Image 1 (tube, helix red, strand yellow):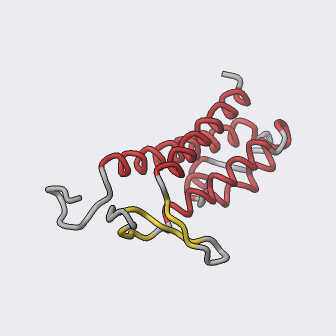
Image 2 (cartoon, one colour; image 1 turned 45 degrees about the vertical axis):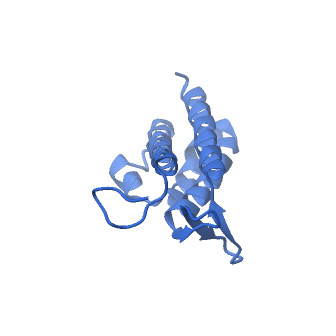
Length: 141
């Protein structure tokens, strides 16, 4: 598929919409995680400027020291899973799939390659919704 703004081949509009939604919901949760870290940081060891500059995976230690102490490890574990999935999306490469459609593919650390399907993106979006719900419950509103 082509668009007026680029001559490069692109995935379908639906796929790109899911891809954009996946990035948006993850970024929203990343900011929400930071909000909760700062709210629970009684020792005032963290600030927004430093936390927002960290890679998402680097937030796991501050999460452990603030959120996990009060809520258990469910939020941290789900966020870690989402960070890994997000990394696979961001560090992907574009392919022409068997159905002659443009898609993204990725590989895991064991070099197993797989296609980032619409189902993968929908699962990622749903898991982000679950994390958002848990963060809202933890915050209390």
